[in-house]
Amino acid sequence: MADQLYLSLWYPNFRLFALPAALEKVMEQFTASGGSGRVKAAAAYPLSWNEAPAYQRVYDREHEPDAIDSEPREAVAAATEMLHDDFAYEFEMEWELWAPDSAGSLDPIWRLEPSRVTIVGFGSEFDEGAYEQNGHIRIGFGPDTPFLQEEVDLDEEAAQHVKQNVQKIVDFTQAVQKNCGISTRLLWSESGENLAEKLIARLQSLN
Image 1 (cartoon, one colour):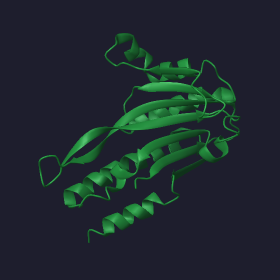
Image 2: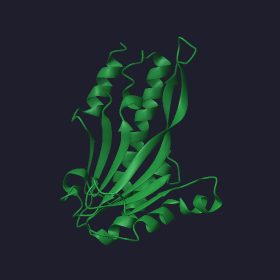
Image 3: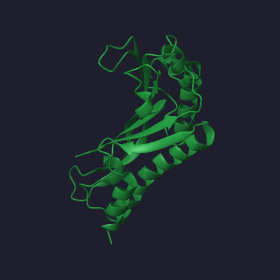
Image 4: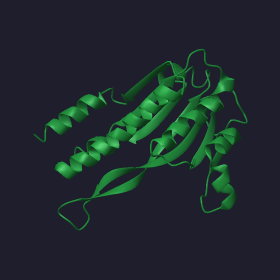
């Protein structure tokens, strides 16, 4: 079963007013690491994830005003206009990851496909202080499937594509560490399993 992957970031002496700029900076590193430079959707949730969003917008890239408004600076400013300690602010972006397409062929053809990434900024009072475990900012990479491909027989080409997918997370994490002024970061999975250990075991199985 696929496992969800996250990167949590904590900042020293963090204050709510610094959240919009911190979100923009993380998005900047995401773009520099191969991600899209546009936000696909944004939402602001009050109190907890169980509540309906107080703000929500889906951007249409074919619509000219949306092309401007979906730039991280504009999207973050719009979503955080109601900046509250008990809100969480979620932004959807995407990057391309290698994935096998086996339709009509015994040997899968590997293609770059869009993959959803969420970037969430937490107010300190949201969901009873969820930031303590999730980080002031949490990046969700989605399921671990593109980074392990456990259901696929990995030949040399396939293993190389899996490594390229993992390298995107590595590059992004290193860029955040270098440029975002964080005090602590944690790459983790929903199940608690270690991605690095699973990847090493997966690649060693080829030998």
